[in-house]
Every structure is written in structure tokens, then in C-alpha cells.
Image 1 (cartoon, rainbow, N blue to C red):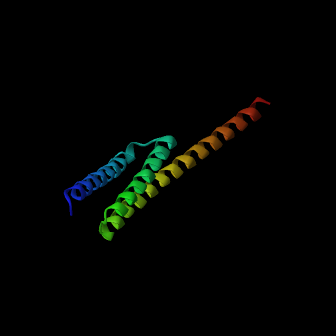
Image 2 (cartoon, rainbow, N blue to C red):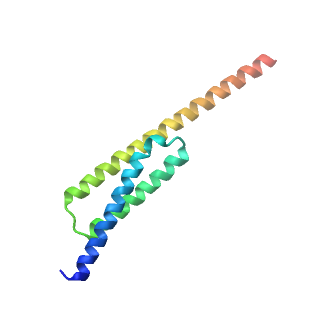
Image 3 (tube, helix red, strand yellow):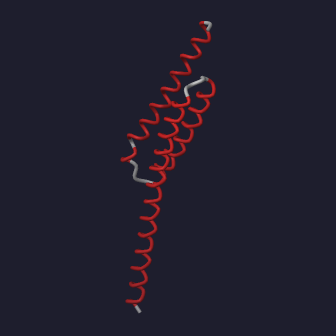
Length: 111
């Protein structure tokens, strides 16, 4: 392997490490997310990281187990974010229904 090829491989490995670090940061910040927008933005970022890792994987012949490990982390994180998004949607829906119910009660009482 030439020096140029070695340098390219090193750069790809550094980029792969950055992608993994970004995934770790997304996981670490999960508990701090409280709005649908925050979660949607993180999900979009997560998808971008997955695509980048796949691109790096295809460029640098990595072991299949490394891709499987990354996929597992990705799918778990994606499920966590989507579950939290669903939770917030249910909370917002129940809050809206409660408001409507209270509003209807108020209307009836005023007549």
C-alpha cells in the first residue's frame, strides 16, 4: 500500500470515528430533548450519520461486524427518538382534548 493510500485510509478512519462520536453525543443528549422539533432535528441528523457511515464503510472495507454494530446502535437510537416523538404526540393530543372538553363545559355553563 502506497503512502497516499495509507493516508486516505487514515482519513477515512478519522471520519468514521467522528461519525461514531456524533452518534454517542446524540445518545447522550436524548434525555434533554423535550420538543417535537428537537427530536425531529436529531432524527434527521441520525439518518445523515447513518448514510455517512455507510459511505465510509463502502470506501474502506471494514469488517461486517463493525457495520452490524453501527446499525444496531442506529436502529436503537432511531426507535428511542421515534418513541419519544410518539409520546409527545399523545401528550399534545390528550392536552388538546382536555382543553376542548373544558371549553365545551364552559360553553354549556354560560347558557
